[in-house]
Structures are given as structure tokens and as C-alpha cells.
Image 1 (cartoon, rainbow, N blue to C red):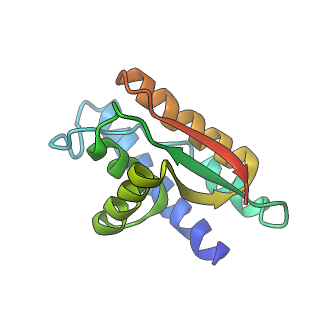
Image 2 (cartoon, rainbow, N blue to C red; image 1 turned 90 degrees about the horizontal axis):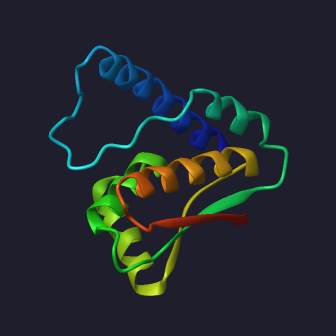
Length: 135
């Protein structure tokens, strides 16, 4: 289970290195998307891999009445590797129950991801919040 999570992060980081290069060169990959989240550093995969022996934590996404549902779905897809249907299901769970778990990993890695998500939301003037807690 954890090895597949690490592999997802590695693939995510590799894809986003290409996206970073496209942005630096003035080409916007997927410019038709309503929202785009800046990629995280490739270092995340290595940190997650190194932290497998440590305690596991989860990112918990929190509901609010202002953040667009489409944005929450994109965040779920971007950081969990879920397809659109699964992302919509998690978004609806968050909307109905108030919270939902995004991914599990090491505290350091998840703190970086949570900070990245909240900074992106803040840049878009969304009050979207997430917190890292022990699993």
C-alpha cells in the first residue's frame, strides 16, 4: 500500500517537473482547466519513502461554504491520484460530513502539501483549510 503511494508521488513529481518547464517557457499545459495548482518539489517522494518507518499522518480537508466544489475536486485529484468520480465522492463527503481524508504519509511531507494547498487557496481568495493529524 505505501509503496504504491510512493510511486504515485514519484509519478506526480515527474509530471509536474514537465509542467514547471512548460510554465518557465511560457507554455501553459492544460490551460483550459479552470484552476491549476503549482507543482510541489520532487523531494516529497524521497521524504515520504524515507519516512515509511515512522508514524503515519493524514491530511484532513475541511468544508466551508465559499470554496468552489470544482476546486476541491481538483485538489483531491491532484494530490491523491483519485479519478474524477472518486474525487467528487470525497468532495461530497467533505461537504456533507465536514471533513474528509485526502492522503496519508509522514508529518513533514504532509505539512508541506497542506501548506501548499492552503497557500494556493488563499491566492485564489478561498478560505479552504486542511490540517495534518495522526492516523
